[in-house]
Amino acid sequence: MKNYKRAKLSRVIILMLIILVGIIYFNRVTIMQKFIGISSQTPIVNIEKKTDQPNEKDQLANLDFNGQSVITVNNNQPTFTTDELVKSNTGWQKLSSVDWLGRPQVANALLNKRLMPPAQKVKARERLTVKTPGYQTIKTGANNSDWLYNRSHLIGYQFTGLNNEAKNLITGTRQLNADSRKDSQSMVTYETEVANYLHQSNDNYVRYQVTPVYRNVELLPRGIHMMAQSLSNDNLKFNVYIFNVQDGWQINYLNGHADRKME
Image (cartoon, rainbow, N blue to C red):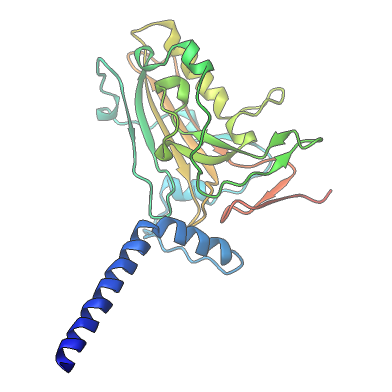
């Protein structure tokens, strides 16, 4: 009888452990984000594997904003390989899986006018519902009329019609995503340049890559690395890094909290 009770208890314990492991596994991203948010005051250790020589992504991640929102990379020359510039008749897009913190990674595409949704669909785009890592609802502006953060597409909706997709949306400031100030540059500046080129002809193709650049385990990217190159000609090309900042605000990239800077 005792052996039977022990065996029954063991089965119950094992079953409970399996259930607990399952709960933790399926909620691992949320749990880690909560943990990181709580421990935001503790020193951060970089757990990613590093080589002796920092690569381009590491170098961009370590840059600090100095008042210039956009900087060129590699003299504004894209670094696509010959194999990455192969033309296809249909065009395509490829999104990387999110990492263990739920953060989107590099997005690649071969853009063509045929992939673009019609104008009426762009205007009637559904509201975004994906909660991107580190997203906070914070008002800015003189009368709190604007939002600090946008849910920013890596591959813009106007290019492929992809909208509520977690692998394609990051938490970006308004200044990063669509800065409306005079003579400012942001993601929309370069997206418009690409869109205008694509609209010129069905034969125009653009190899496109957008990479969110994170520093260690921070939920918000420090910036966005954008590259584009037209195929068959050199009419369009750029290689830029855009800082994920907002003038007048101090951002905690670990959890998305932000405060107005003291004057």
